Length: 331
Image (cartoon, rainbow, N blue to C red):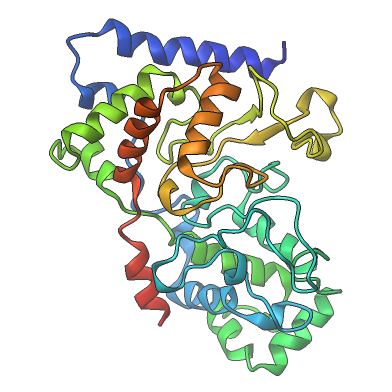
């Protein structure tokens, strides 16, 4: 067995034990042993100025960062009109019409994850921001000089000087990435489950609490725990029953280690009802399918329709209430 599998089993035993053994504990007490409230500020945002954030916001919607001026970051990670930071496609379509290999994850709360991309090839938001610009299946730009020329011609110099006042030539790839990261660090969702964890026990109703208890008792919390209910470890897709997609080997494509075959970053469940389709390959079209398939492939259990629906009801508490506020700021 791999170290990841052993670690998950230990985590599962530790997490499931308290919820079954502490029969006198309240649902709220049990929840606090697995989850924590989202922070008000992301780590790394301490030095982010309003000028840097505003530059990052502007760049997030800038189509000049794609080879044919057809796409921006927002094309695949849509934030307009209260959107959930995704494009709702199985796999995204690039500026040149190429179809990507993986489902586009949401940018909401991305900076709270242990790493970026499904395979973890980037550790930080700023590292991640550089990849799509030059990926031929995404924005397909050919060089840093091309990017600098594009932004200079569009009058970005003043924005970059405001964001990086100590630099004589501030328009460069590193600063583009830093600005995009600064903006994304503002994307911390807000939901009723957060209020519940913070002490408002009436923030979620009895049916939602029942779904939460089922989510815990079935062992889903082995992977989906912490502030974003996921995003903190890599797990094999198909750990109990093999997952059908054997083409994408996940983390192994980065590390070259066969032991990492089919390992992917565990997705966050915050705002999950609004980010379909699901999984790294977008194979689950509905949340019901995603819940059922996860139970089978990851936990080795067949969830009934009633159990699937109960967990879905709990997921209602994770709906992002801040997305509208951000979309208004964008306008």
